[in-house]
Length: 332
Image (cartoon, rainbow, N blue to C red):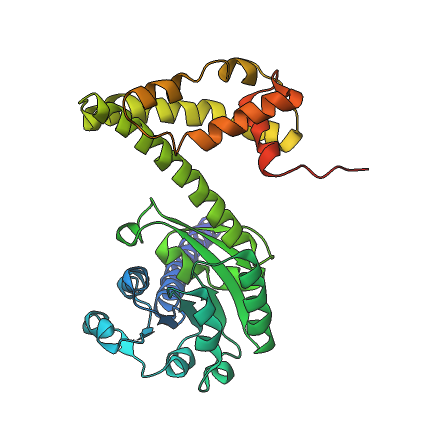
C-alpha cells in the first residue's frame, strides 16, 4: 500500500512539475516574443519621394520607431501624422536611427547628405542602407567612405514600385557587409523579400540594372508588337492579354534558362532553329515597314544577329549573340 501511495504521489508531482514547466516555457516564449516585437531597431529614412514614403509607411505599420527627413519638409507631414518623428536635418535623423535608409533621386547627393553638417560624426555604429539607384563603382566608393566613418554599409536595389512595398510581390537586392545584413533583417524584411548577393557592394546595383535591362528589352518588344497590331486596327489589349502574355511567359520559362546555361558555358549549340535560319529572311522588318511601323527597336538586334552569322557562327543558337555584347575572357 505504501509503495502504491508513493508511486501515485510521485506521478502526481511529476505531472504537476511538467505542467508548471510547460506554463513557464509558454510564458517565457511569450515574453521573448513581446520583447522582440517591442525592441525593433529604430530607423531613420532620408528622402521622402514616393519610394521613401512607401518604405517609411511600411516601417510604421510594422511598429518600428521611425525618424524621417526630407529636404522639402512638408513631405513628412503625412508620416508624422502616422507616428513618425520629423528631424530638422540629416544629422538629426541619423542620430535617432540605428538603421539609416537613404532613398533619394541622385546617387551623387548621397555622400554629401551623409557627411555634411555633423551627419558624418553621427554615423558611427550605424548601418547605412542606400537604395538610391547608382552604379557598382559608386556603391563601392560610398561603402569605403561610410566605413571610414565607422558605419556598416549595404547597397540596395528595389525591384518594386511604391504601391507593392510590403507585399509578397516585391523583393530588394542587397550587397555589402554580411553581418549588417543579418542584423538588419527585421527592418529589411518589412519592405519586401530580402535577397543578399554578397559582400561586394557593387553586386546589388549591377543585378538591379541587369534586371531593368531585361525589363526594358521586354517593353521594347511589346511596343513593336503593339505598333504592328495598331497598324492593322487590331485590339492591342485583347492581343496582349490572350496571346502575347501567355507566349512570353512560355518563352521565358522554357527558353531563358537554357540560354542562360549556354551563356555561362560558352557552348551555343542550337537545338532548334539556328541563327542562320533565323536571319535568312527579314520578315519582321519587311512587314513592319510595309505597315508603316518603324524598325528602330527591332533593327539593332537584327543587325547583331546578321553580324554573328557573318562572323561564321550561323550554326549556333540565338544566345551566341551575347558574344558581340561582351567578349568572353579567354582562360589560359
